[in-house]
Image 1 (tube, rainbow, N blue to C red):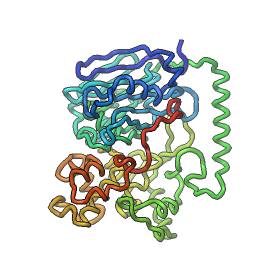
Image 2 (cartoon, rainbow, N blue to C red):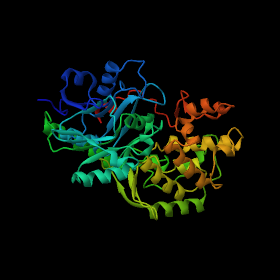
Image 3 (cartoon, rainbow, N blue to C red):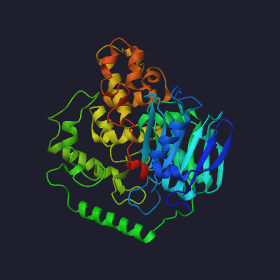
Length: 448
């Protein structure tokens, strides 16, 4: 009997339409645990260094952490590993939510995709029943809209859906995979999913996970919960409220954004606005968030509630994770109301909330300094908000200048030339926009 893990991976060859349930070696678990650890081992063993991100030989691996789906608090991470179109190196991104625990309950530790489907498809995993289904009716649909359609189509309201939007279908280098209140956004893994012709993976599981010493294990889990309760009741003195608690920054329930707006950079990562935050802004932004936020939400088996459902007038309700609240606001030198509105559209498109606003700010800076001209932006509105919506749409459709910007600032600057390279300065190792996520192995994601 295997404990915590299921002992099986689901391997799907999209080119041939072949599905295999493959037993795993328990020695691999002893050496690499699960999640990111075993994901990296599989990619290392099976993908040679010369393989390109959009090659059929590239793998796209969805892995659940070893403790995922057990009573261990906060263990809910889906780790997605592949060769990144941004860096041309191994990359991983992760998402919380409920998808990985559901995969474990269906009887699998990983879903490993190889090859490419000739047509757009989605995968339906229901315990031992696994199907590759036609997704032509989902082409061009938003990531959240896709999930809603599939849950109704399958009549499985408790299933979990990981889906891409139009950005993934069109292989935007910073396309995300969206799942409910979370997303795997970094490294362009959504572009690899789109390149493989997979619109969504739907999972429903009803099996059990075995624990070797359940009484002792539950005792340890209860100790962790007691510590969380104690720490939450005693924030760290002298630390900004957003970071004084436990876990992810509490941007959805804490209103003090003085630290962010004064110390993080606005626009294309050059300008700091030390005189921006004042009592009037604090009051306005507090009212905006209070009116938009309909409830605080958590991931599977986590009490922290670092996400929220957001409802803006005239727009569908969507879920925002802890770190996305200000990325579009500060990218456009605009207000929080705008940031919450455009983030809804970007979530449907399936775009990384960090990279996308920086790429758009990069494009506008090139326009302001004459490296790009008005001819590169036909029909673009004059106002800041209108420009960001215009660029967002062009990027996800890869139309006009959007086709170049869809590759991210580093690769776009190489194509544009004329000194544009100097403006692609907010990157790590030249390729990936801040914040830092170099896809280095992090042992906590072997377990979570």
